[in-house]
Image (cartoon, rainbow, N blue to C red):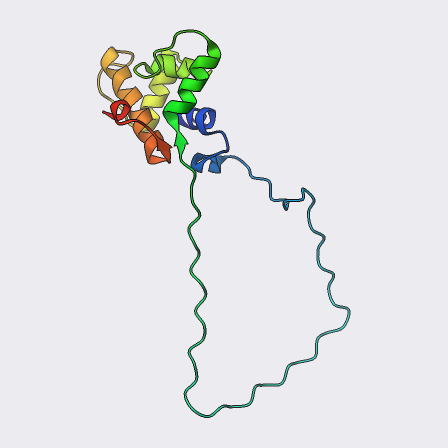
Length: 157
């Protein structure tokens, strides 16, 4: 799992659209798998062909188009503010990629930020520089927004 996937997991968990990397439980709602239907012991008799009808034949029914499922939007600012409040210590996660990673209990080292910059194709300045860190923070917020997160405009610009 890459650094950005870890960020997504720490923020979205398996609640939102980014949860697709999580293995989902395929058991029915009752929590127990349904038993397989037993195979019939005798072959079914063939059905007789329908009698031809006079006049135009109706077109075969088109299958209903799959309805898109509503993807829940995750309030990125709300989740992060709640995490910061729970920690009870100051955090500048709104501006600092280092503080954001620390808030999410992720590695904030230069090596981890280099890896994240590579994943997000961020090459704004020298690795570890303030300019690179700001660009990296903005890229993370932008990517979260692209993946279904609600990110305030001031964190994207």
